[in-house]
Length: 236
Image (cartoon, rainbow, N blue to C red; front, side, top):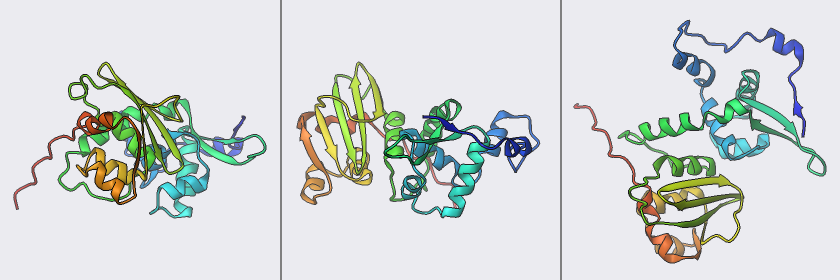
């Protein structure tokens, strides 16, 4: 697969992010290149692999086609995202993270860990990419002591493979060989089991989640991902 390069005249004309703080702090520069609304979420969605324009838009239901086009163009110009043309028979254009773009994963995780304490955290949409990053973020080695196994998540069209053992977790896009447990359903439903305390049996009865494999492993899974204590709301 070849990278589809931006035309040279566009690169020559590009002088950096459109909004500048004139601040030498690298954190300020990070906000210049990722602070536009939706930009960080577009990057988040590409952490599960290359996606077509329509795939990204479907994962971000509140974004318009026009805004998504602008954000992808800006991220491409700054070197965070690139375009690839898949070989036949697909022969379609997909967006992917560059090597530098992939290095944003720890940033997203730490930002999520911090914001998980917010007393105003809300929302119902939970994409597979968000689910994957949340598992990496919230995994607690102490709580997961003695837990081991391969758990696959089938979240709509997205397959994630996770391996827990020796107080560590690895979770990557794709299907693993011989999983001990497979949880299938929308990311929101599986997330309500992992984080929301909704019993797995209830989700199965409602027909939103299916379970295949080690039920004992499923029972202890939520305990491996404790949420942080919620910060206090200000008085008044």
